[in-house]
Image (tube, rainbow, N blue to C red; front, side):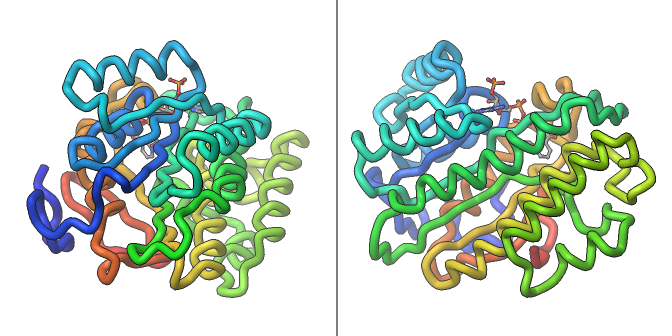
Length: 297
Ligand SMILES: NC(=O)c1ccc[n+]([C@@H]2O[C@H](COP(=O)([O-])OP(=O)(O)OC[C@H]3O[C@@H](n4cnc5c(N)ncnc54)[C@H](OP(=O)(O)O)[C@@H]3O)[C@@H](O)[C@H]2O)c1
């Protein structure tokens, strides 16, 4: 897949980065995450492949080494659903690399439903992994972003169109999340309300998204948190969300419209946009092999 016309450079064009540039990619052992690690390494960025299982992480690293990309990739253990693992990851990053992080790709995510199912049995785990995972990781890594970077620090949250505000049928919830003055606490409260509704068995009547509900709410919260962060760090950290579209990975039981490599190619291009062209607070969407126009978070 060729980079979109939106993107002003192609391989060999203007590159602001070098092998000093460091990116963390969570859930980097397989699927879209693995493809993103590979693509960024091919482009010459130093990538920290984060995975929750040592064996899987090292196997992924081994595969990249066999493809000649080992020099650019390091493996570190990280379970994003475990706050202690997040703290340990940040300490290990600090010890090995110091405050040199330029790009964070929050990719790790879970869904327990088959494409046409909609159980909310795993709501707590899905919210903990897909929303609180990126949130706590960002907070832990904030001191490790490269100080005084002239290239703008980048946070790219891998999200989903299923978490778009228009999927929420409850106007009161939508109103809170679409507010320009939205606060972090309001997002946490929205998520707590959802989990209460699930525990009380009233989630269907309360107007939450109808498809992949627990997953959609986790991404809804992630989008909302990205908007809050983008505003807070305007001018120093670019925060955007990217929906890879229906991609053939384990999450979709191999179904989808395109490969993880296609999604990763666009995600890497987006993560590496030249500083003057880098937007913030945007939601990017890969739809049938092209990048749909930007929308506001
Ligand atoms: N595929 C799609 O159609 C699609 C569409 C929209 C958005 N997305 C998003 O794209 C991202 C990547 O998904 P994918 O399709 O590539 O799925 P995938 O193949 O199932 O990969 C998910 C990755 O996340 C990791 N992970 C899960 N829980 C974790 C945890 N607690 N800590 C650390 N890593 C964890 C998995 O590790 P293990 O191997 O250890 O399980 C795996 O590396 C997700 O955020 C997903 O929501 C995917």
